[in-house]
Each structure stands twice: as C-alpha cells, then as structure tokens.
Length: 105
Image 1 (cartoon, rainbow, N blue to C red):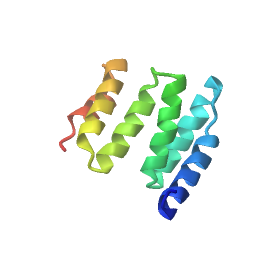
Image 2 (image 1 turned 45 degrees about the vertical axis):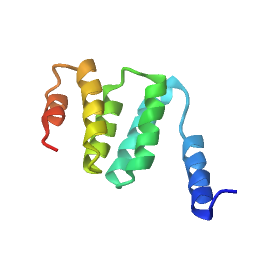
Image 3 (image 1 turned 45 degrees about the horizontal axis):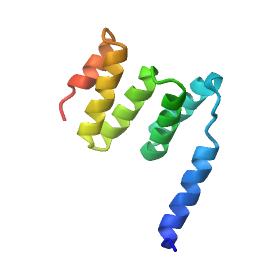
C-alpha cells in the first residue's frame, strides 16, 4: 500500500493527465495551459502538459522551451540545457532559444 502523500499525488497526477486534451488539434490549448501553469509556479504540472504536447508534435519547439524554462527556474540546469538544445535544433535561428541555451546556470 502506498503512503498517504504518494496516494494523493498519484490521484492528482491522474486527474491532471486526464484533463489534458489528446487530439492533435488541441495542441495549442494544451500548450497554453502548460504556459499558464508555469506562470503560476506549478512547474511539475506544467511539464506534464508540455510532455503531452510533445507526444502529439515532437517538433513543437515551444514545448521544449517551456520545459527548459521550468527546469532552469527550478535549478535543474542539465535538463534545462537538454530541453533548450532540442528547441534550438528545431529553430536554430530563433534568438530567444539561443539566448536561453546560453544563459548562465
């Protein structure tokens, strides 16, 4: 049996994932929701939404950027760098992405 905190987290995570639109045409709505959660400081939930976007569209540089910013803000510089690198590979001439990839950790 799971400890109470893990059970609650599992229930909340399941509810969040269940609320994520799964159709490709809902990618923008999912991306917007991820951005809203990130702005509210709910980075882990936000990253769930970004990952869901990437399941539908592996070429969505905005999702990689969002995850990178979330990880950077949380001090997780290695995963942030990996996300920024993925975004730059998709949009190499985007100065916003190049900036984030070069941000000091």
